[in-house]
Length: 610
Image (cartoon, rainbow, N blue to C red; front, side):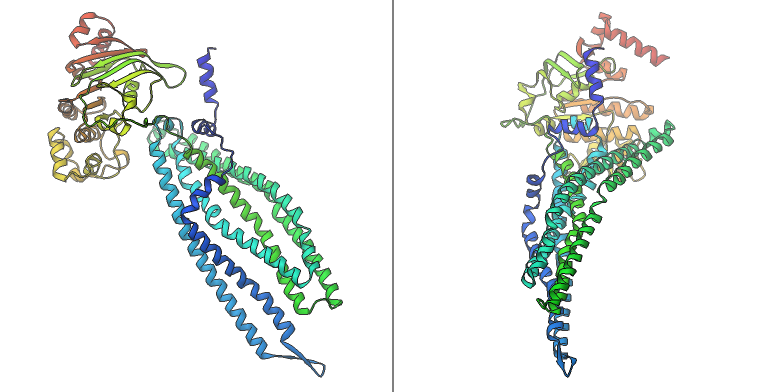
């Protein structure tokens, strides 16, 4: 087994997550605190307001125990061996209780509003950041990362951050305030009450640390399994036609069901490993409550406390213990949010493989001369181009031919800097392309590929992508200039016809015509065309050929040629085999040499007549 085969197999063994870690050049298992704080910095004023509201809400809660004590200790007087209710005390206490309840509901509503407002701002800003970052990544990232996993990062993973970033801090603050204030008041009423609760805290902190570690690992697994079935769902939607054509629907359904089972199993397994925490805190709370009742009963019998203080302290105990019961939910949300944050920042920390130099050039005008000089390139370990040399004069129409998989499309990918050559240089005019700003380069280099893509909207909407300021008449004039009007205006709604997602409502030929017009409007000095016209009727093919000839005028054109007419009309034909130029010249010159091009031409002629 050779080394290249071993490298390919070792790459194939990598999981999707390991591939993402390699692309990000970092591990997913890392602290998120320094990453998350900048996210909430723009809404820090809202978080401060929420915290203030939570403080007042907690204070409104603590009014109630004091009111109970006030009624029991001051609301009754003893006369002739009977307890007489003091109605003025009762009415005052009820008024205070009513105000405290109204205040609590009001503060809770205000806290919810502020939390929602902060959450929307943070999550929208994060989604915009993710979207902008994704658009900046190099093509190689999308070749190796499943679309569904990217969607999962921007959708469910972002949603999981809200309970952590927005709801979590105020709720944690509320829990700490209730515990802290209840502890102080219990100490004030009767110090042994405080100590009977304090002894459980070291046990609770130790167990909480164990639970936090286990829970975070569990939610990380859940997030990964969710990404897997989301990725499969997206692939299935995009490949529905192929799935049905291959009669693969049942097997694909089974695969999806297995992914869902894995997802469900990860939730069940994690729940089994973390379900002990809530009952354990319940046991601690029960022990502390029992100890409190014993100590309180003894203190009451010794008249160390009043009946009102005892009743008041019972409320304080519940206010102290209730947050302990909430820790399960708080830490699970923390673990889930942290696990999702790790995946989000794994994407955000992935840098584009190709970046502009600090002093990259913005070229206003170019002539269109192209030169490949000793270029080497490989997608993996197997070379695609080796010592590749090619020169194309400005304004020349060059057809590139050769066997499939020998580097024709790679030449296009390197010229547009979708990929970077490992060795050698590529020049446009006298400038190395790695010294030209990518946006400037792509302004001068237009592409119409075989797998042409349109976006949701009308035909005019798609044309306006390259000329946003153009009027409808200017766009229609461009359509007419390329002779595409006779076909496109026959569509149900003419140029206002909705093309559908990826142009699905149009035929292959109609889509290609729209893409050719779009390239014409962009008016690049260098044009790259994949001229495939398979599955197109003769009339549409003639229109496309006319549009191609019109489009290639007065600009450097590189055509990955499939049709005999295009090959014959080219100023120069370049034959590529095994990543190297093996022949170049005009159609007549290459036929006379009777080498690789002659063999390709004879094969084409035999197939076309067969």
